[in-house]
Amino acid sequence: IAGITQAPTSQILAAGRRMTLRCTQDMRHNAMYWYRQDLGLGLRLIHYSNTAGTTGKGEVPDGYSVSRANTDDFPLTLASAVPSQTSVYFCASSEEAGGPSEQFFGPGTRLTVL
Amino acid sequence: GQNIDQPTEMTATEGAIVQINCTYQTSGFNGLFWYQQHAGEAPTFLSYNVLDGLEEKGRFSSFLSRSKGYSYLLLKELQMKDSASYLCAVRDTDYKLSFGAGTTVTVRA
Image 1: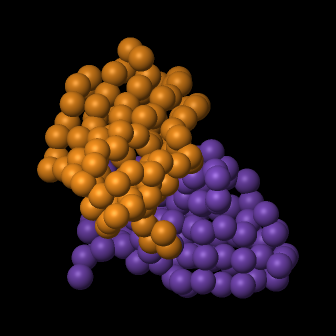
Image 2: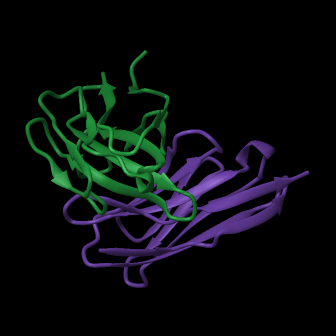
Image 3: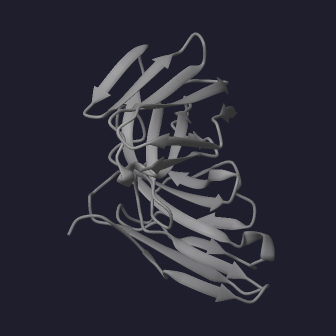
């Protein structure tokens, strides 16, 4: 089934640990995105990639890094997790960055940093 | 950047109509999206507006006025399954989406 997958589904992590959230899409979409969703704040863009090989910073990039080595994968890394990074993380993709292309969202990763 | 405002909560009766307003202030506008998100699930796309006017898609319609920085999502013939959060999102000229905090709609029998 075509779509976008994320792993893990949920994770409890000790502060200071390194963690990589995985995101894979099989729709051959050019653009991919990482958001975090916190109660009352809505979805906030962390990093994005308009095409393979390029990445950009969103609204809240500090403490996170991404890479886009190929079209399908867009991992998000927390180098040294802190409790304020406790959130639900959504990966999304769209056929193109512009035009009427809507973003398709993965099921999310619920991360708790203690 | 973007500043996006939408009401926090709305309640309506099954079969009724509800209008969710969204106002935005933007440094560059390149489209407005509405998404639906059920509790514990991922957002799903509802509508897209880039030009002024009304876009209709079944029971859902979305309106945009760029000069007023205003959009609304109209939900007609409400059903219980429409109970969800509705997210207004504005895309800037760098193709980045900024989301409002969402409007939780509760449909009552």
